[in-house]
Image (tube, rainbow, N blue to C red; front, side, top):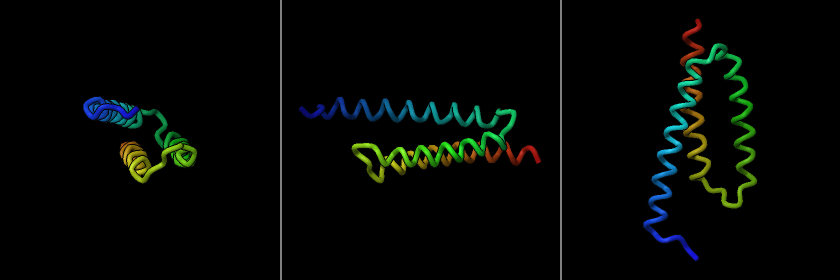
Length: 87
């Protein structure tokens, strides 16, 4: 049975808010990490593993990958800012 449109819209908006909050929290943690260069290496590795795990999703669309890459790019940018601040 398909989800009613109103419930679907609510779920999408709720998820959007949750992802935004988590993204900002992770960016704040990245900016304040005591060893941003080490964290950058770990994040690069995790990003590749995460992207590979998307291959196993039952519904893998370009939109899912685009959303994943968008959040990872924002975190990478925050982390790069921290690394630049070291120099």
